[in-house]
Length: 137
Ligand code: THU
Image 1 (cartoon, rainbow, N blue to C red):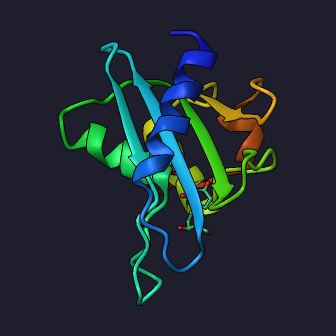
Image 2: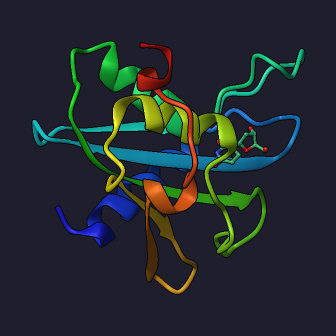
């Protein structure tokens, strides 16, 4: 699947964001080796810490349905009411660590841009020195 098509799905998923506290909507679209795409949105909570990001929503949907192999994820975000996407969105540290658990270092993270373009990073670039299951073997 083309990055631009995955970005469209991430942008589409933003509509389901539940973000009454930050008013910041995020959508994610995760492509699995099976060919299936799992989308996610951020889901906030009045107690704040139960809030879950769009990326983790997508991962946990996929994992809970038996997916184990992931190719790439697209992410889109913007402040509610803004017309343009937030070009500088980047996955939070907790989501990077979840990716570290289930993805290879060359897993691609695609950021949807307001001009219709996208930026592509590898997980190893966004989490270069990391802790993983090997550390506790
Ligand atoms: N958020 C995400 O869903 N993904 C990111 O990559 C960054 C932040 C959410 C969490 C919270 O609901 C809102 O954006 C503001 O932090």
